[in-house]
Image 1: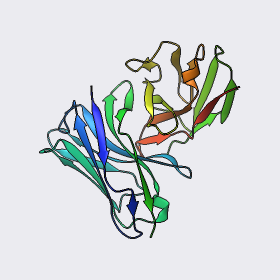
Image 2 (image 1 turned 180 degrees about the vertical axis):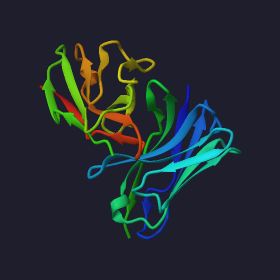
Image 3 (image 1 turned 180 degrees about the horizontal axis):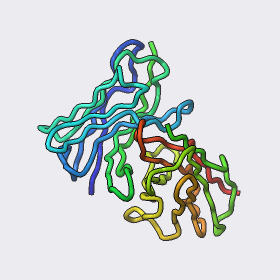
Image 4 (image 1 turned 135 degrees about the vertical axis):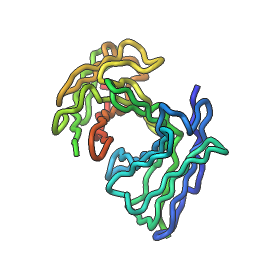
Length: 125
Length: 109
């Protein structure tokens, strides 16, 4: 059974960097069949996919256009986890942040299962 | 960007009734690249359906998905008390690769 455990601060000051980590059990961050994603949820923006990292003989990253200039997602193979860094945050970045495993099938697309427990991150001074 | 519009925004039904939730895409969704999730207050979304009609592991058979192109449906055949929650659809396509609908709240009548 795959489980994702998130950690990181719940309060970040404006203009600073939001940092979260997602620890994986029951699967590998280096899996050739999964991608490791960050998704956030807020009342104003709903569920918003932020980006992913995945390994297919080498590491790849994809990011949402809305955050592309500010986001970094990194794998940590030694700890079997991955991280999110979002720079220059504003109150608009206040949201519940989730990590999620993405699975893909050529006939069925991409789906997310499981999800981490979520971290409410508030951007405020 | 493919925009997913879910309807109705809120659906009020009683346990034992049938629920039909709609997800309409602004342009055709590739193949059957659509998933459905259930979210209860204070919890992360839970995968119900992927590939438009495949039930995820452990999901009761009262949940079913159908549709293709731009119109997709999640049906709950007989509502149980634990089914009252918010439901989201999600598609996989080009840029951005993933988008979600705004959700349908299923509430007890």
